Image 1 (cartoon, rainbow, N blue to C red):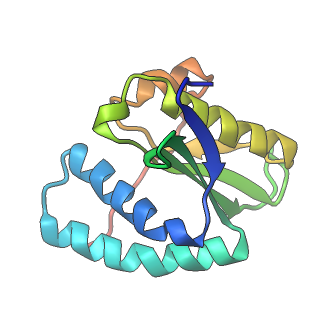
Image 2: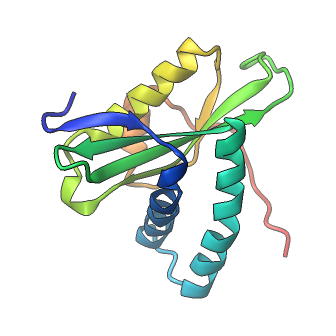
Length: 156
C-alpha cells in the first residue's frame, strides 16, 4: 500500500485517461512527432475500447483521496500459441504504465505491477511480457523481469 492512494480497476469510462497516459508515456520517452502521436491515439482508442469490451484489456489505476488518477497500468491478454514458457492460450502483456509527474517515486508503479501480476497468477497467466523505457527498467528487473531474445523489424 502507498499511503493516500488506493488501487481500482479500470472501466469503459477510463478510455480517455488511458489514451492520454499512453500519449504522455511516449512523449516523455522522446517521441516528439506530434502528428504521429495524434495518429497513434486516434488508432489506439477504438482498439482499446474493443479489447476492454471483450475483456482482453484490463486496467488498474492508483487513485488519490480526491479520486484523481495518479498512475495507471494496462494488461493485454494476448492470444498465444502453447509454448514451453506459459503453455496456456494467453500471455499477459503489460503496457501503458504511466505515473503523473507529481506522484512519481512513491511506489505507485510497483503497486500497480504487483496488482497486475497477482491477477495473472490468480487467472492462470504464466508468462508476462512488457517493453520498458530506460527509466522503468530498474523497477521491472527488481520484480524479476529479464531481457529476452525478442527482435524487431519495422517494415516501411
